[in-house]
Image 1 (cartoon, rainbow, N blue to C red):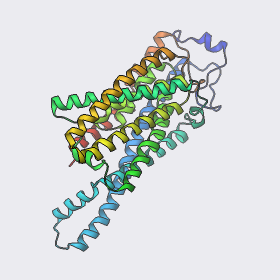
Image 2: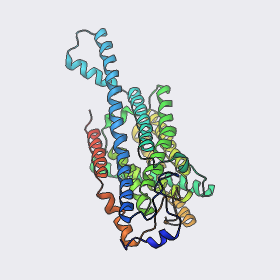
Image 3: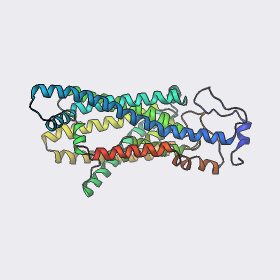
Image 4: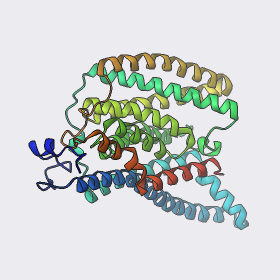
Length: 377
């Protein structure tokens, strides 16, 4: 394997193949074994999404079955004359109510993300939480620019989604599902939605996608890892309304994580993005919609996102000038990287990922779920 820069590897301390001090490679480990380990990391990146989706489905089914059984007993006690169809419709309506859907979604995704992280920590032994939460290398001004720039990306993606919807009449997700996850007069449910959306989800998702997935994809080429992990992040949202938005935001989260050498700035930016969406939705879609009308509130919401887009783009330009493009010196876990010849590097990026079965399984699973949500009752 002359394409592999063996001289450079042999002249320096052998690189680690795991994020820790265990399982260092043997002296003279072949380039074939090296490629297998890198491809195995790609497979684990895809399998993490599969684990999350499967676990989330199982947990959601368990919770839904328990709630359905309780609802059936209550409904039959109140109205014993209900037939099977009426009972099924009543149970479905009760489960799909706003408060219940918020509760089910929050519990399901928090549990699924935590269990998935535990699986990769225990099973692969290639994810070390403490190593992704290292000292932040970027100045606070760069993190602030990334947070503002992220608002611009969020505003741009929402404006594009609204343009597509106005041209095609297609929103990307069933309105019943959207309304079920909206705000209500129940402040307890609104608080649960806030905790899940603004605190829990950003922390767990950044640990998964910038801490685990992006680093599993990063040993050879950082730009490839940035784009591929953002793609996984978009797919993970499992609805066409957020896949595009998630991909664009994932690029910003990954960029600041690489440049800072820690997932903490990405968590801050992610929290800022979700807090921004939470506040705007609460003001325009819940409060103002009931007072000035849904159409006027929607127009005001779009104007605000347009302002955010302009300010955010300026912030991203300043951040780019300040930090520069992603290079192979940018990595969260510094010892988890390999020096390759150009030809070998190209073989171990997109070509290798697209040959991983877990990549295709996870993509099909997420797209199938998105299609299901579009047609959900």
